[in-house]
Length: 451
Image (cartoon, rainbow, N blue to C red):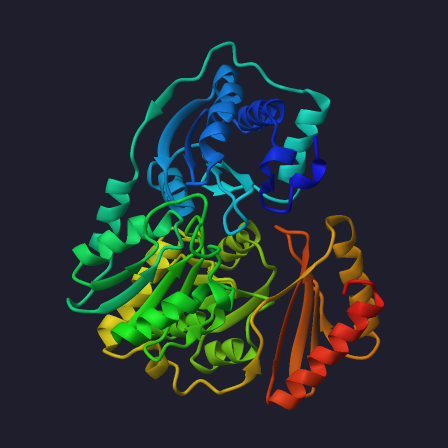
């Protein structure tokens, strides 16, 4: 067993290397054991459209069902629809088989207990159960049934989102699970859609399903401009992350979407709290405060953010990567389809595109997320050493990596929890300062052997 596949908030690896038949069966048995210890007996199971997902589903069930756990299979769905089934149907937990935005050869497992997914030490406890062979036996075989969740999800959105007919929306599904759900519902609710790569295809033949990478948004940007769309929407492979393009064809990043969402929410809920990760723009935090909200900076990671959302009783949490967690009018988990419909609702109601809505947001110079390959066994040590160095010279926030404050900007380095990589981001008042901050960071990382 490769212990490194047990990450901070999910289990993820290269299928042919990390997920042989025995491991996946044992994972099912270990997860069932974890559920029994928590007094849980009935879960939902979903999978994305990756080529390996059907095989992993069958093997996982070979471990779960003999251990006495009842399973309701919701089929091939976006990750948030699995979460929706857990909460809406009041299940004891759930498993999503997904590689999210990783390359096609990857896959993984998100394990839910109660209404949310486990993370941190709980994931490591599942690994411990496998290593120690401490599998529980219920004395009965669990029952397997199938029930589609999409009809109830669609009805929920139709009952809770209001769109004015005629909104022109360009949609890029990235050949993942999200476009096949979202685009038909947009049309049904009166939007005029222009669609790219809506068909599910685990080869991801057109572009990698990750809207945080500018290259992956190129076709959507071109479509928005060509069709004069009011807005463009993109999803990652399992539709828990949303990307957007404004009416002028400019990519609107996750922290800018948080500005749009927070302003709308604060009109209805003055003083509301908003959680955002360490990668988000300082102008986002400042804008929330300027409009009467309470911004809280926190760690990156869907399970970590969800936990903080509940702890702070926040209305919304979001990440630069496009994970959006609405507790306002929703269940508090990351759902790119729901988030995109909330965005369409705002644009529809205001009669303005994202460029107009963000026209008064102060301009800064910034980079998108920058990923540097760094082995899993080295990346955290590199970040620790970088934090130690910068703390001697600058103000540093260390809740997740090192976010270093400079007189006219900031820079961040943190270890990815999903890939063997370092994640960097920079923001400054002007291009010259941005280059200087980036140079300082990259020089130190090169010295530490990370570049």
